[in-house]
Structures are given as structure tokens and as C-alpha cells.
Image 1 (tube, helix red, strand yellow):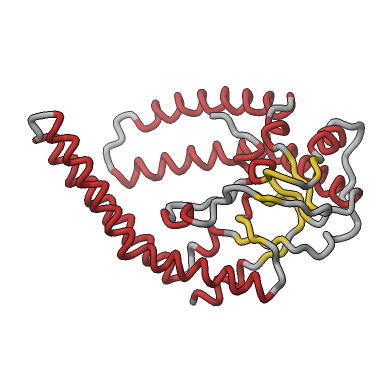
Image 2 (cartoon, rainbow, N blue to C red; image 1 turned 30 degrees about the vertical axis):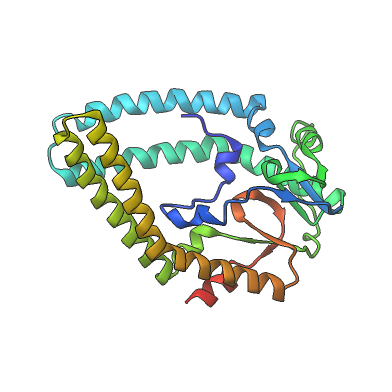
Length: 270
């Protein structure tokens, strides 16, 4: 399993199908001098991260073998789940042990470079199509420098870029209820479609079953999820205007600075 710097920083969106409809940023056209960006893929490909990933890969392979031997013959579902969780916890602990110091060093390097260049925000390069300052090389140089990078003494300056933590908004009751209901409907329809597929006689029948499933899911989404998506989008837009924000991005694309409006959005949606 390869764990990259980018994967580590990405916030967990969970099963919320609706989030991608408007929160996954397509691009950020940032012709603003106090916005910087970092190519996280360049960071994740540094030797330190490559070595850490190889170490984790070997550890996971050994762990998988131990898990297979441990669970062999275990029939009770609860016991299987308990053993699986035990091994998952072991791997997560190893991840933190191996990658934690590297993530911390990278994040301090980003903050230090941003402070030295008087940047209010640093984002992931993936969402930038124009403008901003590329500080990737400066971050890598500081990361690889002698000694530990020093965290900035000052906090990030006020920013016109806001962000939300989608994982937190997913927990708002009306959002969670809508998503859970849609996921259950989706699973039920998938099971029905699979049964039909097994009974289908021709490829044409199977294609029709697949088309029918797609239409059913699209209709259900329009009926149940789209209204919640529209409300969520309206709330974010209203809060952004009130706070004078130029744009709002998802937390996973923000590396430094920015204004957190997650609590405002969550409160307005309750």
C-alpha cells in the first residue's frame, strides 16, 4: 500500500455521494499575490517518503500473512470483525510511527515558507490554473535542509480564501440522514440488479439491466440528494459573501492559512 503525502492531507469525505457535485474543486483561478501553491506529488516522491512507503509496504505484507493465519478457522462474524480491527489498528499505528514525523516536517516547512513569503494561503497545485506563487522548491529545500525547520512565530494573515471540512459537515443530521438513505437505496438496487444479471440470458438483457439501474439511481438522486446539495451550496455561498471571501475550497486542498467556515455552515444547515 502506497501512502502519499497528498493522501495523508486529504480530508475524509466518507460515503457522501453528493459532496462531489460541487465541493470537489475543479480549478482555482488565483491571480492573487498572497496565494501560494505546492505540488504535493513532488513532495510525496521525495526519497524520504518513498523509503517510508517501501517500509510500510513490507510491514503490511507481513501483517497480511499474520492476519490470514490468525483468522483461519474463525467462523463467528464478531470474532472476525474484532481480529480485522486489531490488525487495522496495528497498521495505522505503524503508519503514524513511520510517516508522522515526515508529515510534521513537511507541514512545518510549508508554514515556514509561507510565512517568509507573506502568503495568506497555500493550496494544492492541482486546483490552480492561473496565478499564485509556486513554493514547491522552497518547501523541498527547507524540508531537506540541515536541522529541523522552525515553525513560524506569527499566525497566517487574514485571507480571502475560506475552507470547509466536508467530513464534519457530513455529520450534520439532515445531511447524514439524506446520505444514509441514498446509500441504502443504492445498495438495495445493486443487489436487485445483480440478481437480474445472474438470470439474464443475453448481453442485450444485461446492458438493459445496467441502463435501468443507472436511470433509477439518477432519478433517486434528483429526488432526494439534489435538494440537499442545493441547500448546502446556497448556505456556503451566503456565508462566503458575508465574510468577504473570494472563494471557498475543501479542507483537503488547503495546506496553510485560510478561513475555516465549517462551523458556520454546519450551524446554518441544522
